[in-house]
Each structure stands twice: as structure tokens, then as C-alpha cells.
Image (tube, rainbow, N blue to C red; front, side):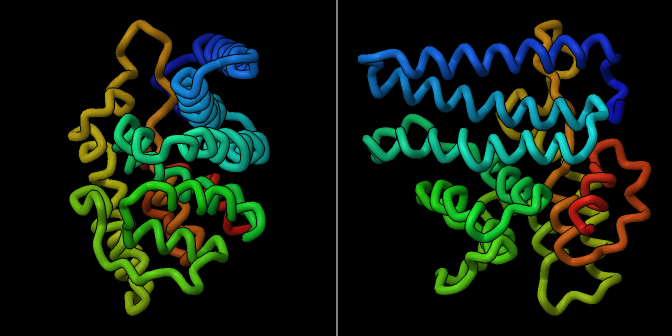
Length: 250
């Protein structure tokens, strides 16, 4: 196990339970005559649980190859499918499902960690572009995924308090040392800043509802892999997925 907040029995139960739940939702979504609202809710739940499964697999100690395969299911199928339903009523979808800025950042980071090719990444980039917000860190990831050409320059962050250090680690003019320091600062404050959001995901390991999947700073790992940053100092971090960063670098 990579995450010791929960034991093996918890992770075994969770992985089986959420996998079965995802299958049930997909079957339900395919029922004839299902409304737009219900299908939208179905695929929101699918992509949400596919992320949870990705994080939980990593937490449980699964091989990185398995984690990356699960991430691909989220990024290549579940999230683009959710957005495809959003496109049936764009304005309504943007209003009903506004937010999720942190998870759009995490999905792009996971795409880097899963080593998506430009062709594979295109549906994910299009899905992120469905939302009206634009973000400088997203653009760094999008460029890495092979889709930076011809895009409008973005210099601001949607959530600057959370991601300013992450963006500093990506600055073209930054030295190797400056990148390393910025990455360490980002990881040091990442979980505390996430917990300042209204998303209960970041504070749920003590509850009794079997919803904990691990607190992993996938964004930091993706940045380290992209820029070849020495992350040795983060080996002891409880939120930094170092072995996934190492795998992505290879």
C-alpha cells in the first residue's frame, strides 16, 4: 500500500465496490428513453467514480501500469462522454456543473502521467475547452500533450492561491533550482489549499462511508516528469506520487 491511512481490507473492498458501481451506472445510462438530465447525471457520476478508482488503485499499491490504464479509461472515455452529453444543452450544463476547476487540472496532469499521445489527448483537451474558464497551468499541460499550437495565450490562474507555485515551477525562464524549490512549495501547501475549497473530497479519510481514495498531488508529479525536476526531496511527502512521476519520466 502507498497510502497507510487505510488498510488492505479497506482497499480491497473499495476497489471491488466502486468498480461494480460504475458498471451499474453505465448499464442504467443505456436504458432506452433516459432523459438528458438523467444521462448527464449518470456520466458525471461515471467520470467522478473513474477518477476515484484511479486514485484508489494508486493508494492500494497497484502497479503503475494498472493505474495508468485506469486513468486512460477516465480520460479517453468517461470524461469526454460526460462532456458529449453536456453539449446537448451547453448553457444549462455549464450552469448546473460549474466548478470542478481542481479536477480539470488533475485530469490534464493525469494525461501527462498516463503518457497520452497527442491523438489520444485530443478528446480530453476538447472536453476541457468546453468550459468557459481558461487557465495558464492548463495550457502548460495541453502544450505538453501536443496541442499548444494556435491557442490563445493565457497568463492567469483560475485558482491562483492553489497553483501559483505550480506555475512557477513551469516558467520557461526558471532555473533547475528554482523549479525544484517551487515544486516543493507547491506540494507542501497543496492539501491545505485544497481543503480550503468546498469539496469534501479533501477531508474525507475519517468518515465511515468508504469514500476515501487517497490525497495525491498528481499535478506536482506531472510537472516533475515534464521538466525533469529533481524530486528527491519529495520522497517522504505523503501527498506526492513519486513512483508515478518516475514511471512517466521513463
